[in-house]
Amino acid sequence: MTRFNLSARGFLVAVATAAALLTGCASPQITEYASEKPVLDMRQYFSGTIDAYGVFTDRSGKVVKRFTVVMDCKWTGAPGQEVGVLDENFTYSDGTKDRRVWALKRGVDGKYTGTADDVLGEANGEEKGNAFRWGYTLKLPVDGKVIEVQFDDWMYLMSNKVMLNKATMSKFGFKLGEVTLSFVKR
Image (tube, rainbow, N blue to C red; front, side, top):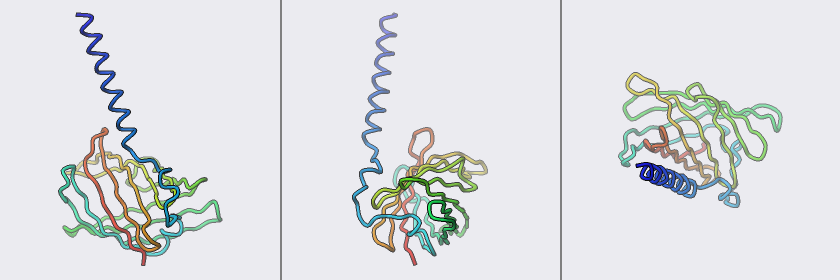
């Protein structure tokens, strides 16, 4: 009996280790985009008015919500101490509306932190080459409750006017769905 328990325990440890290694290998890293062009400067792109068009898909790939966003973006402060405000106004296909106001701070080496009323704690991001990766926990209202979901949010600058955004939403490590957006700078 003891021998079986050790073997079962060893098997479970091996499976968990293999899963962790495979997950780590499967996830792209921001440094992989360092030489990609055009080079993204968040302060430059997110300045002025930006229109966005997006969908939320569930884990099966079905479109659950469509939405548009009008963003008013501005940066203030001395170089190296700039603070950005991204005021996002959402309109969903069912007619409902929402608003999120991000306050962003640029750190060293293309790193950013950000806060918003419906974000738990602080979001952390980094830009390299044409890409920006952003991670945060969102307090999401669902059926009269608020649940906390994690976002792994990637943005790719395509031109000085267009950026694509793909974010994976998960809970306890399980994928719940994806948000896909196209940003168009006016």
